[in-house]
Amino acid sequence: MLFEPFTDVYPSFWGWLNQGPLTLTLFLHTVIVLPMFWLYFKEKKRLEQEK
Amino acid sequence: MAKSHSVWTSIRFWRQSAAWVTGFAVVLLILLTFDTMRQIKMGGKRVPSPSVINNHIDYKYSKKRGHEVPVIGDKEPFFGKQWSDEEAAALLHKGKLTSQAKNCMNCHTLLGNGAYYAPDLTKAWLDPKWKQMMPMVGAKTKEEAIAKFLQHPEMYPTHERRMPNLKITPDEAKALVAFLKHMSAIDTNGFPRGFSKGVKEFEAGGTYAH
Image (cartoon, rainbow over the protein chains, first blue to last red):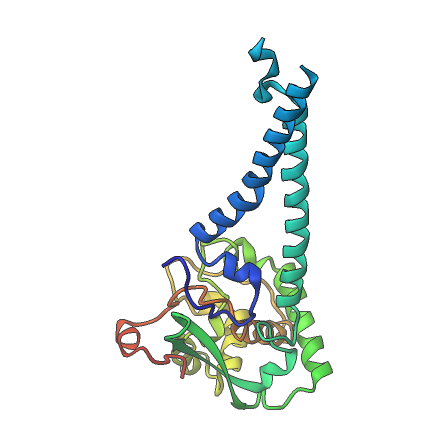
């Protein structure tokens, strides 16, 4: 299951995130890779403008 | 000409990406450090206060959480008395220092740290074997039995791998037992899994630490 009720003694966002490898992978890819798309297109635009 | 405008060969892009990934990882690790500090604080929900050595500690399977969780029970004398908060804290501190001085981790594992040569000590206090040890060492209580064993482990071989005599004094042994008892009350999210648990108890899904 991707999402399961959080049962740890401390209700923690990080604990919920780390309940399984998939949730952690999805989170890290979302926050790390998505901004890189933005960086990519920003850089592409800049290079085209330079041209 | 198109090649010279490829983003993949742009140093700026890689530099910005590296800065973002590194910066994000730094922030994440700092936040996780604070989260950990909050969770491992003594007296919290996970790590009980030192005076927990005055209570009976049990271990019960939690269906909701899918593993065994410590259950802090009624008051019970520890070495024949109730310990005040200050006394218990001092005793635990001495126990911790002794465990470091005698290098328990060289063979044992404590809370996931250490070696796997000798039994895991994280929940050693709850091991039903101490009950069998009591008549062997001539002790009336579990804590006395553990203390006696720790002072003369070579006299009571329980395993092929024998624990050497580490010249632990009676006071140090007492402190070590307190250290072990407190450690067994820490909610470790079910670690170590089903330690010294018999099949019967496992099937019953109940406690086995009485």
